[in-house]
Image (tube, rainbow over all chains, first blue to last red; front, side, top):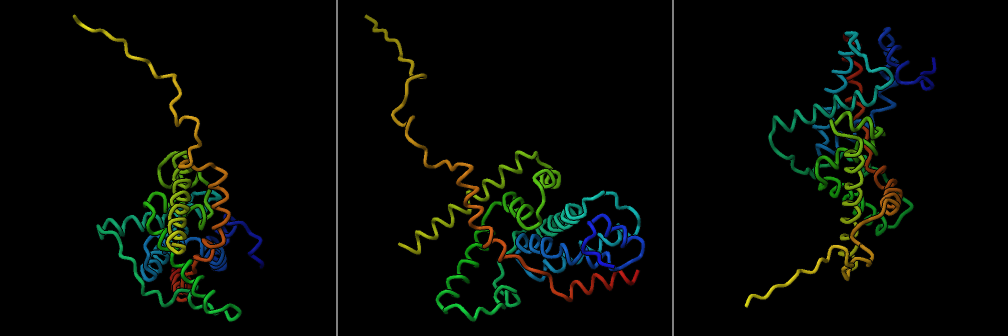
Amino acid sequence: MNLQSYNDQDLVKVYITGDENGLQELLRRHKSKIYTSIYLLVKDQYLAEDIFQDAFIKVINTLRSGRYNEEGKFLPWVMRIAHNLVIDYFRKEKRTPIITSADGMDVFNMLQFYDESAEDKMLRDQTHKDLKAMIHLLPDEQKEVLLMRHYADLSFKEIADLTDVSINTALGRMRYALSNLRKMLKTKEMTYKG
Amino acid sequence: MTKTSTSQNNVNSPTPNMFQPRTDIESDAEIDLFYDQIKGKLDRLAKDPKDETISKILAYSRSL
């Protein structure tokens, strides 16, 4: 059975009726979106893995108990669960997480680019690190919208529902996030040139 | 003798800077263009969870 052509809701039904392949396909389809959003919020790979796992355990428990009623909205629903787990974590910790540089397992850093010069690689690595650091510097509410929009591919309506704000506020936060990133990148470029 | 004066109402008078372009405000087009420019860079920040994490999730599901 080729499940790749199924929509999320159909995959949920496949899974609920006892076929594990439904869950496997949902994970394959959405793991990167969900994990990246968590990772860029908590800034720690191991914590992100834990939260990702906890989110899916809640998903599984809800689906198996027959309490799932978010027709056709699987991704925003999982994102809401993950988002709440991130909020719970920060509430418990009552602190802003430190930026960990112990990123030895970073997929990006593990990739080999044989066809570029050492200088190009250094520049690319630097840009990569800069952009990640700049995202971390954004105010939480702007970062959240940027991650949900870009990585999780949620609509502004879905983001607004998830974060309990109006669509206009969500749109405004995205705009501010981009505007702030633009300013930070400009400043960085000026530093390089200066 | 008391001097009286009437204050000049400047509300509708153009101030020297009023017609100068406001460079501090970005247009929607500028922001959209910027977003298009950095989309690729943002995409390259995307990460997958470890295979081990996925395996644990699937194992949990199978155990129920």
